[in-house]
Image (tube, rainbow over all chains, first blue to last red):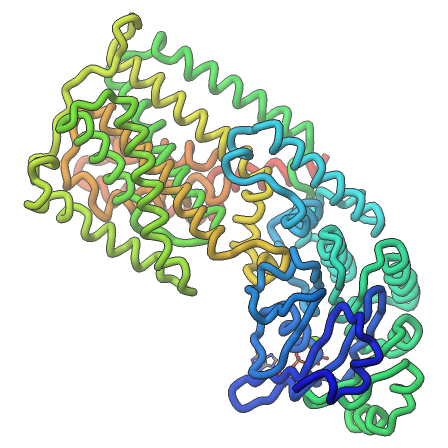
Length: 268
Length: 323
Ligand SMILES: Nc1ncnc2c1ncn2[C@@H]1O[C@H](COP(=O)(O)OP(=O)(O)OP(=O)(O)O)[C@@H](O)[C@H]1O
Ligand SMILES: [Mg+2]
């Protein structure tokens, strides 16, 4: 499938992320079916859809956990499908997980330090010999991690074991862990889950602040439609693995297919 | 619950300094068989430290570190005996051979998911005594007889007995390994090792090369355990194939668990356990030694499931929370 067959893609030639015709199958289940969309630099793009629509699967494809059966993904000029999962962080794709994937035996700070893995340098030998290079690396890494925690109002909990935190705080640690690597694209899978009204407002302000301060693009999966409509510039709606709408929040909200999809899934 | 704070860290540092001072003074306090036993404990602690890296921190099971220990011991013995090497290059070469062995052996087993490392290392441990006895290498390994190493490692200018010199040598290597691993697990790659154990997918999403980290973990662990094997040769002046059977691997694993998997001090405690508790059991009852030993082990498992160090750490945290 070439770009010329998709006029909407031509309108944004400077896309940071372009997803083209991605399909993903689990045995007989088609989790994603010919999904295409683009995300521009500094753009906040919402992904909506009922439970089981394929939103998390899409994220897992973008972070190379799942390999699609068809399609192409270009990120920042690189064909990411030719690269292994661990290369995504260095390329500039950071993410959080819907079902918390922290390192439970580590403190908050240590978790964020692992997030800083690709920006730190020291290897086995320099660290074990305690060389000055390793010490400087560690000090700089800690500073960056603490600053990120500070920004999320979590610096006072730096030494707490993450397994001792509540769900909301764990989500924030995941956020910090993804932010500290200074990604170009941030994938947030239901960051508002478990937050009260105030928390959602804080989150909205924070996402906007991160985008404005660091120029990061954000892909945001949320069931909290109100948040999506007020923070995203572009919204992609999917249902049963297919894209059913793509446009501004207003366009997508008014789309017949989206209304149908949500009426068909009253639990959302 | 908090991770250890600075004041408890300072107390820990003080205890470690005191322990090192005691160890350095030890040859002036004890002699003969007891000094030999302590040297052996330190040597085993090094081997257990190696295994602890892969099991406790890396979350991979190795049932074959006794065999890695054997390779280290034999390479050093053959180096000194057949090739008339000085002890220093012999020990260094033994360590490097085990490091390379770790890479070559770990490569195929670690690329696969699941328990392949456990199975492969189990097979290695089973085969090792027979490999060492094999006729094709008998000229060097001495077959069932093993290898005697007679040269004295003490430099002429040092007025130390052989036992005392070897004690200090082993102590030095153990201290370097101890502080080296402690530093590692406060650094980027050390955290990557733990991250891979705790959540592989998340670790990879943070940019950790999971396969390469697992391989490096295994190779590093083989280096330490192999060095311990080489030092064992210096201590005992004799290696024989049947002292490196599957039981050796199992005992190292017992030491990791009893001491506290994934703790820095655990291997030292574990080594004391596997070195002294069998004697203790024998003193309790000559006829039921194994049963008594098993009893000690079961008590440990039930009352200190996270090992001695894990247990003490939990106790300290609870004490601090009460204050
Ligand atoms: N590892 C897997 N193996 C098999 N099927 C899977 C797997 N992961 C997801 N699926 C299936 O793919 C479909 C999409 O799931 P996905 O988790 O992507 O949905 P989602 O949009 O994130 O839903 P939710 O809003 O509930 O998080 C579902 O039918 C799900 O059962
Ligand atoms: Mg989901």
